Length: 476
Figure (cartoon, rainbow, N blue to C red):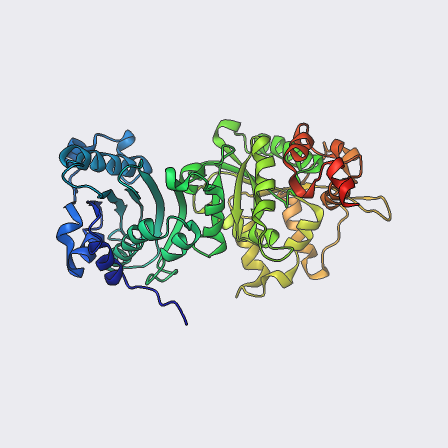
């Protein structure tokens, strides 16, 4: 029997009929779209303590305080709203008079599509709630980007999403993956994008927010997510806005000296070419969903192994569904008009010049190149040593198909493809697949092919299939 999903009205009614769930709604920017569902469902008097919309900035400031640079549609503003409203409930209601009640505050602060329809709008949505009256509060916070071309439709979508979040908080907290999927119940995935989510509190003490970010990309709820070396989910707009961006794509399974050599030398060239400083440049190590799925379904342990190593080295990670490079550059261009650079190996560049990858584009490879080589974007090419001829392949001697030779020459002459020349030839025969095999079979020699300190981390935590020698002998 198929488990039929509840409508927003049914979910709101289920919450209203639970005598122990009680809280407030504070919605700013799109109307009282979420709380309206609860009023209409019936029985709202025992659920809703207060519903408010503090639209005027001065009045809102009087309640929640002023915001840095007047950023009212921000995560900081949302969390202030959630915590302030909960504190009011705790202050004004006696626990003795209302035993068993689980308090909550739901809030959103959004901006919908503008009059000229040049900006579709975005916002922050969240809930602070208890699962038991004697427990501390939990929080779920998410960022949304509207896709619909009408303000009324955006408001309706936001209302349904809010109901789904409240219902999920009280019914699916033991299964965050199901909670994330339920956010789109009765909401078309093409109508709204969730590009950041954060869980915290006692109910989520074992939740790794990086895995929750992975679910967003895996389920098609967003194209990419970013988290910093501390493992915190970052809003792409916050981290990329008006920044120079330098990216390196790879499997990083594990990260090798080749990856670091490519990154460091490529970045040095980029900073010089772009005439920019590290402080206004965002460096990203990208892993694609297709790479994570290379061996079948996504292995979450393997995923965490990769990003934990990158985090140890201090790198920011982006997980994307951009199999084609032009889509990655197009994504960056939505956030910045500054310089963009990508470091890649020869084999990757050959794939960029493979027309078969662009059959889904009406303009074919020319359309892809229009998006890829935009904004003075440059490729920093790391050489490849042919295992048969032992010749190093660079931009000077690699071969593309005959019909693309002139196009390739054009990008070369205009310095859009540049060779990384200050590379270490000793790293030419380091391959991550060989390192993986040596780790699994306990061969020696792989430790000096990866960055300092990483081998100890792999051994200590049993990463990438590593087993201690004593344990290995027991199996043989």
